[in-house]
Length: 318
Image (cartoon, rainbow, N blue to C red; front, side):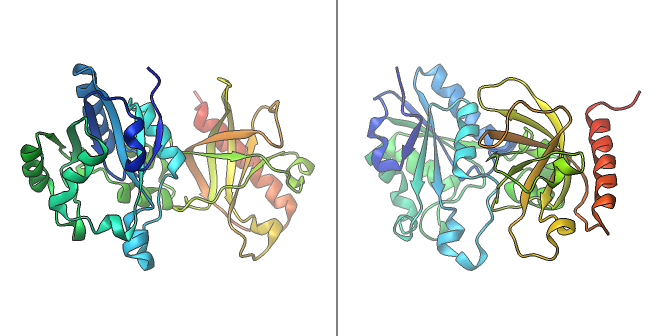
C-alpha cells in the first residue's frame, strides 16, 4: 500500500488509510536519540498491531509565533526533520502549521481535536516532559486522562541521558555553536549534516592548489565558524569523499564583511562533479577556528596543515 510520506497539516491527514494509527508527537528538532525513544516506540507498536506509525510535528517552532523576540534557532530544517523521521521508520510525517489560532486550542480539547482529523488514532507517544494546549497547560498526566476518556492509549517515553545529563535539542545547539562536533554527533545519534548545491566560486582555491566546492548554506542554528573534517556524498551515489571544509566568511579573501557565512569544501580526491551538483556534507570534527592570514601564501600553508589534520582524523597515524 502506498502511503503519503509527507502530509501538510492535520486537515490533509484524511489521505492516511483507515488502519490503527500510532502517532508520535513533538517538535523533534534534530531528531536526536531522545526523540528516537518516542518515535521508535510508535513504530514498534504499529508493527505489532499491523497499524501505521506516523509523526506529528509543527512548523514554525512555537517560539517564533509566541515569542518572536526570543525565537529558538532550529537545528534542522523541515526537510531534514522529515528525512530523519522517515529513516526512524514512520510511514508518514504530518507537519501542522503552528499559528496563534492553533496555539489557542485548550489542553482539554487536544485529543478530541486530533480525533477529528485522525479517526483511526489508537495511541499517542510523547516524551515525559511534553507540554501542550493553550498556555502549555497540559502535561503527560493530562494527556493520559484525556486518552483514557477517548479510548486512546498514551505512551510516555522517559528522557534519555548521556554523560549524566538529559539529551536535548538545547544541549546539541550549545555543542554545535561551540564546535564540539563529537559531542553533538553523539547526542544526535548520527553525524550532523547539511545539504547544498554547488555554485561557481572565485576559483581562488584552484589557483593556490586547493580547489573547493562552494555550497551556499545558511542554517538557523549556525555551527561555530571554522575548519572541519568532513565526508561528502551526492544523491544516488554510494561513494564517500573525505575532505576538509571551511564554514565562515573567508576574512583573508573578503576582508571585513557582513556577508552570510558560506561553506567551502576541499576534497582529498578530485571529484567527478561540479557546479549544480547537490551534495550532503557530514560534519565529523572541528579542527580550528576561522582566522585571517597576512596574505594568500600564509593561507595556502595553513590549508595544507588543515588537510593534513583532516587526513589524520580519518586515517590516524599508526
